[in-house]
Length: 80
Image (cartoon, rainbow, N blue to C red; front, side, top):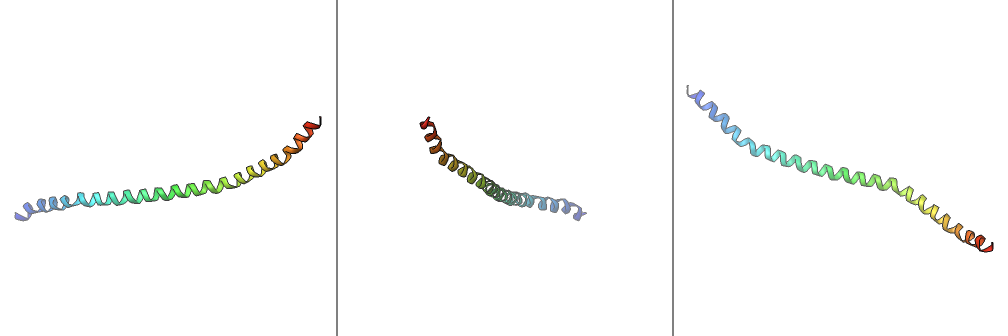
């Protein structure tokens, strides 16, 4: 009969230690998720920068062409 009385107490004692373990796991997973979030955010930023760079170069080239053609346009307008 005694083992039946002690069994619930042992189970209760085992459950009592578990919340700390669960909290530790939750904290660890939270840190891992936050670290992964920062990695993904950095990768996304790098991808955007890599995609924008050629467009910036093209825009600069077009602006340079426009600025180079502008003196000719002003000279033609002044000649009239």
